[in-house]
Amino acid sequence: MIYKKILVVFGTRPEALKMIPLLKKLSEEKSIFNIKVCVTAQHRGMLDQVLDIFDVLPDYDLDLMSKNQTLSSITNKILTGIDSVLSDFKPDIVLVHGDTTTTFAVSLACFYNKIQIGHVEAGLRTFNLNSPWPEEFNRQITSKIANIHFAPTNESRNNLIKERINSKNIIVTGNTIIDTLYLALKKIKNEKLDLKFKKEFPFGFKKKIILITAHRRENFGKGFINICNSLEQLSKKYNNINFIYPVHLNPNVKKIVEQKLSNIKNVYLIKPLNYLQFIFLMSESFIIMTDSGGVQEEAPSLNIPVLVMRDTTERPEAVSFGKVKLVGTNVNKIICEVTNLIEDINYYKSFIKNINPYGDGTASKKIVKFLKLKKHVSK
Image 1: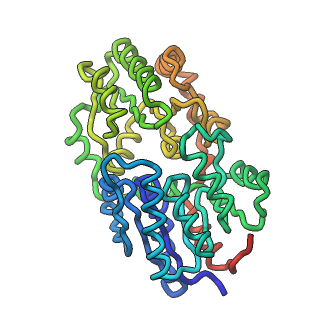
Image 2: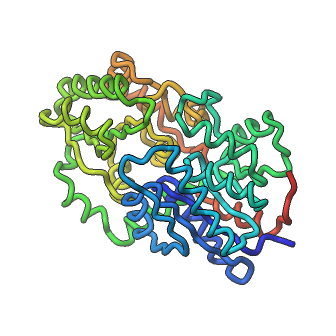
């Protein structure tokens, strides 16, 4: 018996972005697959933005986000809520993504119900459970109980093999976020959204742009203070460059950022952007400074240097290819690297290489091809 009934589950904006191109490819095979979508709404507003942009209407919505939610409460709600979905639909396989609490809790529920699990973006590792936290734990545990592992790179595949995952159950696909990136760029071009966005932003595009994204838990406190101190010094040093920071709504981020940076003329603290706005802004940027995971994968396709404000990364491929550099949250190191990129054209050009280690935009196609041919697998 092949996989006929497939449940696709996600709960956050990053998960949605990486699962939607796969969902659309699966939907092209309606004669083969019965597809249902479940969202946990671990993140409500930001998730809904993505669903609206790509016209996705979930079949099940657990709607579990609440104020002051903790990881324990989220996990508990997902375990309880997903049980009724599994009982109602009775899927042959459940597809989860990456490393969120949704991923971990849904996979655990499937394990308890003896339902097969396909893990998209499997095999990423830092081997440090505290960095990123709790994502490293979530993905390691998911790998222990998943049946099929869709690894984005050979390095991810090798990580899984070292953990004694059966190589027959691993397929290297590339990362689905590159599929999404190309969908977004096409939509921006076809609908001429670039002209619309330029009018909406409170800054011009004549000056160079440095785009900043930072929100990770492990940077709360001292890490964010250091990041803000770096940006403050850089913005004063380079007042001919605009520093654009879409500020995460988490109070642990927002409070520090606004205290440190709100009164600097060429620093623009703006509201979180929808995906299309963000991709457009990325494409217009000179440098990107981030602690995000997805940006490390997307920016190489746009040929933009990325400085990662983390001490570790589970995406070492872009570092190895010379398209991304780890700078941590050390003020002097951040300032030094940004300065080098601005003032040394040869150093800047060394980041610009016409290859993205995370794929060519065909990851979803490879996953669907595998699911069409693959019978149920055992651990």
